[in-house]
Length: 448
Image 1: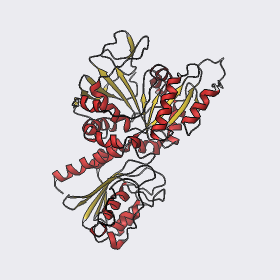
Image 2: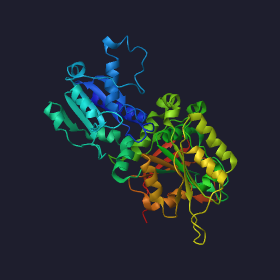
Image 3: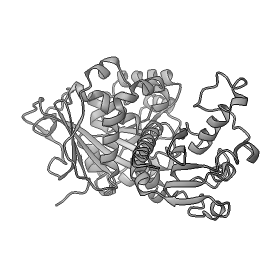
Image 4: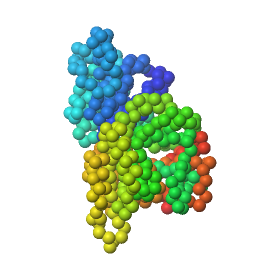
């Protein structure tokens, strides 16, 4: 395969992983591409919605659907989405793919889950070579057990460029499998002075409109979006993923300012992917808007509960998407004289229970890891924390170097005497420019 074909292959894997991320639930957003030995693409696919096809099964399902002899009987069936698995036998597949290369961003699974093992399917399809981006950290997978492939004459090797290409999409799954915690991004929009709000904390727009599309697409890539008590009370955020025509029309051309970043830097590479693919995939995300909806995570203060308009907004979203995607946490009191079992009004409790499939979790002052573990236990691989001051303080001891701080600084917005974002003095890992907005990527660990 020549250099040009290899570049096309990695770019295709990036696009497939990008499209998968945000709609696979607890499953990893895997990409799979089948090529001829000289690099011509024969089939491509990514993991479908939770409980649907893994990437490899989706790929061979598409090939089976489009076999000439099946064309008439399968006419009208789309090449994506959930459907019955085809019964691929060796006679159907084995002879057809011996002169092909299968590349997958994550090692094929070896266990029975909601679908049969993908390793068995690969053995049946019998490609000449299997390229793998990452070994699977899931303890249910017999990772590195490649003897069955080798016994059948299938060459297997790890591909570091494929690993780098796919890491932004798999980082959350890998981290959750290893630690039980999701990949955390803390995001804040700031003024040209680096302030996220005025001293009065009045509700006002901070980021410029030309960055809206990119931030909404970024939101679609996360399994959950979270906000703290002050933001809930002041802004009454909806937290759902949405795209409008005006966002698409107003989107500025993004530019990467910094050039050199570490090879395996998932956070910079995810932001690069958003800048690269957001406009090209906006119509796809709009078409599948319901599939890209994140969990809406609210940390409430029992002493400052939101108004009725907040609850009405969440009820309307629950009805619109037909899913109970709200998660509620209750912030504990910092007053040692106040009871930890502070009760909620019955009406509020009923509203919360009607919007969520999961119990309300109470959080103490130092329970940042409890918060993240709770999300991890629900199969949430990634969480985007829309920050003012709550999450930087609450999660400070629970963040790792893999996690990310994203500041969107609007150079045309002034909040002269406001509240500074706590991370504005931290070193910048990478920077992007979208119109009047600088997107600064930083590491979460404080340098002092």
